[in-house]
Image (cartoon, rainbow, N blue to C red; front, side):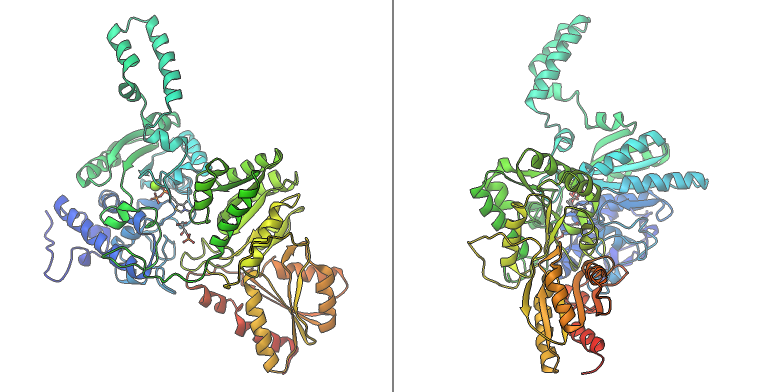
Length: 633
Ligand SMILES: Cc1ncc(C[n+]2csc(CCOP(=O)(O)OP(=O)(O)O)c2C)c(N)n1
Ligand SMILES: CC(=O)[C@@H](O)[C@H](O)COP(=O)(O)O
Ligand SMILES: [Mg+2]
């Protein structure tokens, strides 16, 4: 029995500095703690924004894990990590929690550098079983007894990487614990056969086929007419022959479940049994409700998956709607093109709303494909469609495309197939931070033969680029940023841009500014500023990062003798490097250059404007770089 009493002004949570403090709590106290945690999470996220519904769903599970296991010695690994808010609050970060996802504040994801309780850094999905397997083997090799526990959601379990890890962990046969947090949701309702299997929504066709087969086989034996009749008649009782456990047992995991993930007593008992008795790989299937305990989030777990600041009473967003986002322009334009062309197929990897494809999915359900969290499969699936003459468009965030590098090279670019990559969230994304910034795509796509790579300066150009990419005979990618565009008018008149042709936006004699995508208007403003200082800057919007408009760029580089490249991408190997290669191979190495882009370190989380400033790619930095290159004003 705990001696800890809730003081008048203090909650139970206020008195907890580490998980050790809860290990003598009664179940009743743990239940009060669960309420405190939910209140704190809702209160904070209503101000900071964040991943609310995922975190609310695992409050009891988090308490139970820290109660039963000897964290941080036992390693707790949160898949994606977007559900780790209760974990952060219980592991000595209560004070800092109010800075969640704020600039220089606490990360929204687990991070090695933030706490010894964050056993593995995450942000991208489906890595937890692999990491936990590695940790388990390492512990074994070091003769340590501690355990590794991976907590993975049903959405994250749909990724190939999770299955690769299950397959290997079963073979390793070490004492690994996997908790499957099944809330039947990814960001949207979860899709695919696994999801159906877990909830036992086996298809009628499968059911009839297997049922007939089983009745036929059993008839040979003397099982009795009763059993056969039950099998013949009752779909439900037949279904009960199939348990989600069968799947995991086939991977050589022991299976326990399903367990009610909001019943602390049941959770504690299960976890304690597993801790004390289990041997070999173990999977505990826990059922939870996404958004649990906050009505608006329970009703709309998809909207409350990740939210900005909101009013607690109503659940309504406090962000006033600004101008149209690039994502919306992409989704609307693709829907428009698909209305006229039945060859268009849109593919998302579990991000239908994030990539602006909800309207498309409603209008063209047959030509909309959500593959689950499976970016690699999405790309090769698109290649299959393209090989049959269709025009697939794969809409994935820049940082998640990193997963599909080989598929882009091997399955799309080598056979030169007409697959469009719609690269959303290119550039820094803001509050999600380094795991989610899309600052490498220009670097990792520009060296692939056959790839055409574009970045629009505004929404109207995005429309033309999308159209150009879709009807280009070969692989083409368009990268565009998170958030609102420039407010440019949208066109009903889509046109194909000339491949590899840039546009001269401003003539100038002293220096050439070469900005990419969302840096173009910034560079134009910098050019105005430079003008006031007596520096005459030319500005070219290259439009194409690959192929480059060599003719136009070289002409103005030679005229001005100075070039500044500006990109919302890593400076390493990106657009600027491409321009340097061009200058060098054209005998213009004497042109003075300055490359502006993100430096060779991971950019932290924070508002985009601050991050652009810090990396030196905002207006003032361009002006400064120009003055430096010229030497004096
Ligand atoms: C590789 C990768 N693709 C996509 C995402 C975006 N994403 C983050 S959470 C999520 C849904 C995860 O569902 P689940 O694992 O069931 O967790 P839940 O939110 O339901 O708790 C998705 C698609 C990601 N983080 N990583
Ligand atoms: C955890 C995760 O990967 C997603 O929920 C991501 O945070 C969504 O980002 P957007 O808010 O940019 O859609
Ligand atoms: Mg889920």
